[in-house]
Image (cartoon, rainbow, N blue to C red; front, side):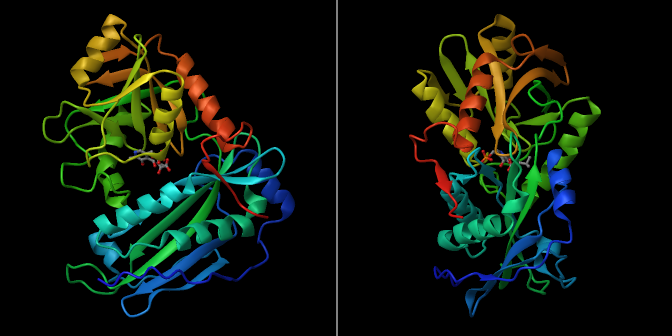
Length: 366
Ligand code: PLP
Ligand code: COI
């Protein structure tokens, strides 16, 4: 497949918002998660002969697809999740967007799709944020950005498609979990798995989420907020949640998080938490951690906190853990002290409150 590295210029086609300023401000007061959208979107096309072309910011509208579009049949689709934050002084910041651009390219390669050049990815995200900056909430809320790409060649043969669309949409969001800072409950899934060795677990492709939904529905049925998956080979090792990585905090100054072995998503929040925790003097072990060990450590008191982390949720303490054989609490069942502190530290960095010594934030010029 031809892979172009050229990044086309982005045309800007604006329209007047169908929503009044007063209506927009009211909607931004309690945006919820993923149900409110901004006025514009980015579109770009890829064809084998032209590479990436026709990139534009354009009014948000439904997409028209041929019913034979490959994505509808063989699920060649990938996405990213990132946020733009408004600082108290009005600056607009992205958090480690180069990492999203890189992961998007890696996901594309795994799914036999042409990678979007990192420069185009970043320019596209920034252009959309600038055009729709009136939709960035202040305070604890932020603008969730969803870059995605899909195969739209009208062809039913099974092979990598020859035409793709790259799109970015934006959604003002508040907390991912309705309970706010309250610890979340997990259902440990021992039947269904999310990703196997050699599969697509490390790629952010829609299919991974489709595969997780029956287990997420089971978690909801069991009264839990989220599902936690075990490995596909032995159904023994903790992997990750449906949409978040997981950390365990021990009483001896160590932390454990499952290793990146190709079956879990290499989370950008996960990578950031490892740096921040090590700076605090914790020893972070990236190693296999079994569900049996988790139960033993919770029972003995060695495990003092556990948390889930990702762009949407930031950090969420894990309280109740329910499984086929019973249930147990992590610590006292509340969000732990380190979890709260790391969450606050990350949010302060993302919102430009604290000095960014790591060079993680990227200012979007007005
Ligand atoms: N794991 C899965 C399956 C996810 O969907 C996400 C969210 O993007 C994460 C982990 C966390 O990744 P990040 O911190 O880059 O958002
Ligand atoms: C994200 O955190 O960006 C995700 O993609 C996870 C999903 C639960 C919204």
